[in-house]
Length: 376
Image (cartoon, rainbow, N blue to C red; front, side, top):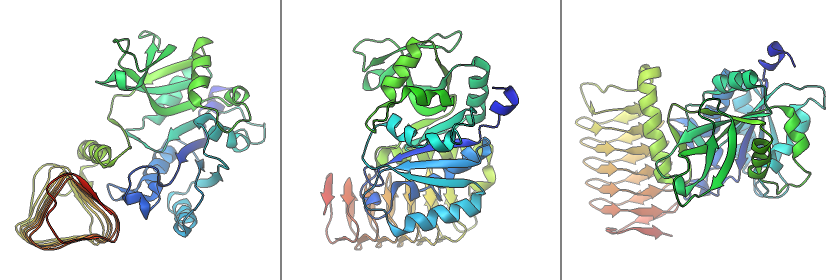
């Protein structure tokens, strides 16, 4: 395999898994890949970074019994918008990560005629995606796999990676160590050579972890340490953490995408306001705020650490902190919403406190909620 050919890396696998296993109640009405993240669908952001790294074809692997009609339309639209070919591979059973990658073998290898490396990205991972650097490191090391790693303050919560600090070669893995061994963890982003398919049996339940351990034992797995942010999307709190980190990166990389406020309202810290949104006089936004398309924010509203999804209305003098408010929701006047997540089309009446609530779609809040609870 020549260096010029390897640098093409025109293929990528995006591992989605289930559409609604995480981020409920938001994913009760919208599949996870189409959930907005800083005013773009998650999958669009990930496909864009893959394209920027040189990928011209993305194989999206998912398992879902009931695929919404919006899925096929959205994929077709993204193909046109991004100029990248998208092939959707539906898994017959909810299997392991390696089993999902195996499904893409025919596309990745072009029926056995290509030996170019390919990207693999877990769709529930949010990070700065240094894919070109990862590819270059893979080519330089000439091993079967290169894995992105990141540091964590809580290594006992994860399976940690033990790597040679000088070379980056991964020596072994340790599952949830009780004593400190390493603070490196698998970031869920890889470059593999197609020879990895020879390691994966025709068993959809095969996990990537076992494959990686074998590769490390045979000195065929290297690592590259991520220097930017990393977040695994498991719940609304991790979603908001990812939003905060992405806004911070945007401030340095693409500051024009953030809003600086105007004569009517004030911005404190990082905030992103869609051009179609309306913000009332005397409102204060930020830090860590995203306001989506067609949202309406009334006069004197205070938003902090919050994402308003498309079509949300917040009436005058309400306060929303550390919350995700689902599509088309309506929050009345003089309300306080803290540490909550609303599904689609939730309505909150005037003068109410909602603290720590998870509210399913199409519900109406009639009375104050003072402690953590699920509104069904």
